[in-house]
Image (cartoon, rainbow, N blue to C red; front, side, top):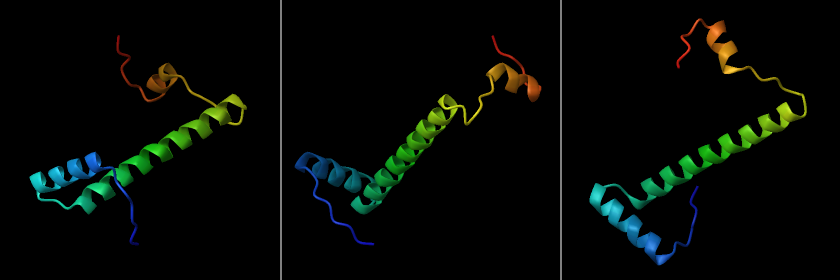
Length: 77
């Protein structure tokens, strides 16, 4: 799906420089940046939703010590 965005001049210049230096297209780096940003935002949203669920008593937590013991993993420290 074609999308059009307007970039500030300094960002456009940096993007051009990176594309020329690496032999990749500007579109490649724009797709990479959007993909990584979306992943970060999805992770943050899921973490916030889980925190709210724990605080509301709809979800439970397990301590690190319990997990290490459950899976017979060494305790560091």
